[in-house]
Length: 138
Image (cartoon, rainbow, N blue to C red; front, side, top):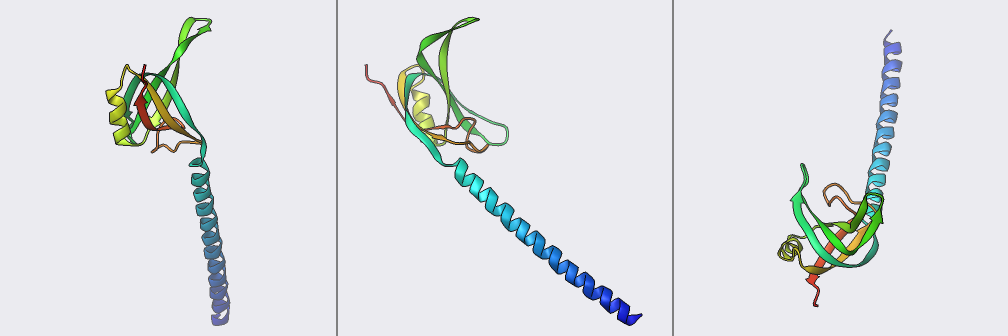
């Protein structure tokens, strides 16, 4: 009976090593895929400017507080419900940019932004991230 128990014990040890190796490899692959996903989502897809009237800038969120804003772009579009202005939603990461925008509400502004492929929940609600703003000289 002792020999049988030794065979069973060695079989369990071998099985345990294989299971441990499997989960280590699985964890490494999952970690690599997650890191790749974060890199791809943080890739800057486009970069540009938009001009219009700053409609609102707020700090909102339940778990992750982010700065979100809306820019009213000049012009109106015809819909079935009637005339409608065009709004552009954006996110702001930097507190200084937020404070600049807060002082420019209702004023024509030019916003400099970067568009990401996807925004993570802690970054903002939109893929458009404003990094600079200035009033438009008329």
